[in-house]
Length: 67
Image (cartoon, rainbow, N blue to C red; front, side):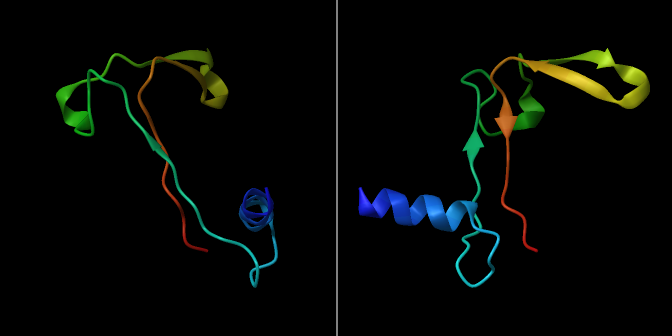
């Protein structure tokens, strides 16, 4: 439990001396890691004037940023 608490505190900290930078990658079975091969995920406009879209499907990609 202490290990999980330590990781949680570092991943949610805004203190640069404590915080960890982290990333997560998820992909759908159909597309794999090669996004050029196609995906079944679609973005449907909720408010296109404000560039607001809702994603439907399984293709998600998130990466860590350096600040």
